[in-house]
Length: 288
Image 1 (cartoon, helix red, strand yellow):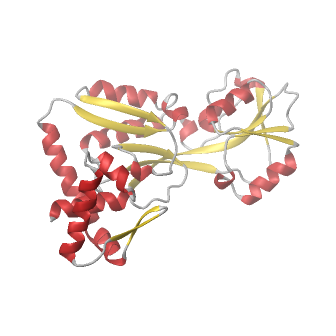
Image 2 (spheres, rainbow, N blue to C red; image 1 turned 180 degrees about the horizontal axis):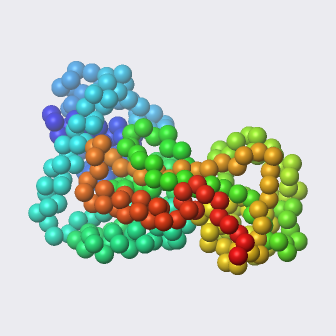
Image 3 (tube, helix red, strand yellow; image 1 turned 90 degrees about the horizontal axis):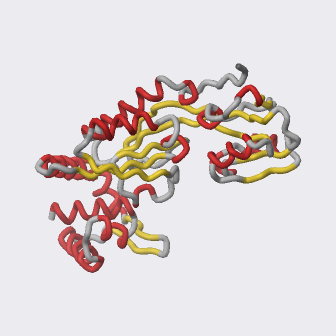
């Protein structure tokens, strides 16, 4: 029964029968049958299938809340014992492309150099949607995290600012790399009043390149402003409202204490952040 409870907990985390079967290398029919067998043993339904995926019953939610942390921790410990018997271990890292290819690359380089037994899989993305359906040992995410199914640790902060090239003829155009959900209604209103035109760009690195080319004023994080070449050619634009700062978080699953490899990478990233003001909530100086 313990194995079936583990399968149920993994299913409850992902809320997708097909994704769970894929991640656990099971046939979909086998997974469905084992969940059904568990429900029969317990004498109560644990979940319901809907058009949006899996919905836990009251009994299913109670079992998940009561047992998930202990069962996942035990599974993680078993996997660590098994992995120690192998010479190669797979490690999956999710991280925003703009910071992993820039300010955090020294940490990643040091991690791969010291952890030579690892096969490192790097996925450059900051998407939070369906994070529970992705395989990862460590996820670095920028912005507030609302998924309580993962353990998290705050590592740093990235301030934002409006910046424009001094000689730009398009200062009235806003380059915006954020969605409306990421900004407050008051800030959105202030920005629309301030700028005649808006270019919506859902990639921060591309937004920085547009600002670098002088095609508009960009609402950029300091991690990108720090990458501007010839910073003295740019200037900040003031608003009558405070611009948001975005926290940097490390996320992992299974147990409150991360694995040794995961903890090593977190510490390397913390050391990297400690040397870079742009990741500590500070405003970068643009003058020489």
